[in-house]
Length: 463
Ligand code: SAH
Ligand code: SF4
Ligand code: F3S
Image (cartoon, rainbow, N blue to C red):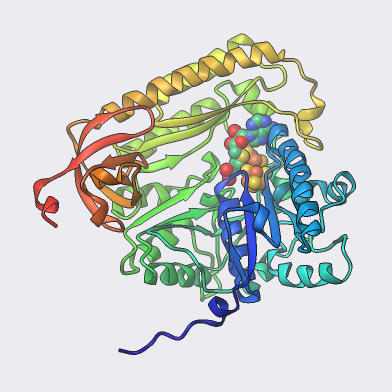
């Protein structure tokens, strides 16, 4: 038997890294990549901030609440750091992500315990920033946009484990919806070259990943360079990914209605690996509000698009995002949102109360919707989408769905495992813990708002 040599990273791991992630899936991906970049420096991740030598808050700026949470979290970290210092140890504190990009030095002004502020395009500079901090604390570097540098400089090797993984293929946004900070925090739309994405995907498949979720703020605007210098579309990328042995499921998020091209819709009809679930935010159902939001599409165009998608893939599960209480939204305009939701019949949807963000055009439109009114609208919208979600889940009862088992459930005594259906529903199955990492047909017995329950069809039970 040959002995596997320990990698340098494993032997050198004596320092502890704690990363707390807020916001969207891209932040989850970025947090993993930050851990990857710090592993060769001897940092192993921990779940306990108090025992960490290095703490990173990977932040989100999308709504006021998300951004403000960071400052109370930093206050707690400062206390932890002081306790560690009394015990003769130290703690380096970094703020990464979209708050770092948007608020920069102001973070250090508001909380001097912060050592490093690093924007989303500069994570590859973390080792250098850490080293500098050790010498002179309180420096802010690297919040400039240099996306190609970032991906080139990040290590290819990923520490991911488990059968599913995120993979960023596109970053940034040129849409400038009037309520949104993302174009300012993530910069201009930019796509990674096709070969770089495929290489990362092959590597993931080699580690046992069966499903990738391609990430981008406007992922369906993907136009990564091909070897011949031309641009590849997201559909082309999906076809190429589907050829990678072991990679059986492809998802992507988030899409913009205006970038939902014909070849992508056709790929959904054609490609088994492309899962029948689509997150396609519309934000509102009123043309006037959509115009004020600068969404560059109207209500009917969205509904027509949904009809074309369903014609190509009749079982497509749809998901969306909605904002209620946008400046000036009337009761009637809100009713149009409810009506659109009723027409589309979503499998799931996210509803948010409008939050004015500094520097965005909508923040200057005045806050004409009373918070109580907006809150009531939010409740009504949530009630409607919950109803639709329950209906969608219950409609699966009696069907047999392929489930990719991802992890053990909360009932080890029943050997429970949890996986996902093609429609991204969470499926709980007993006597299935030996099937993690496999895709197996499951008969659905019941459906609740957030999960399905099913059982294995007899052949797998013996396995
Ligand atoms: N296209 C992006 C959207 C990111 S923001 C992506 O990659 O996911 C996610 C959702 O947050 C948006 O679709 C929108 O519904 C909501 N949102 C954005 N700005 C907001 C604001 N100022 N107030 C309330 N909700 C907002
Ligand atoms: Fe924000 Fe609109 Fe861009 Fe989505 S498309 S990230 S909502 S500006
Ligand atoms: Fe938040 Fe930035 Fe994502 S603002 S939603 S973490 S792109």
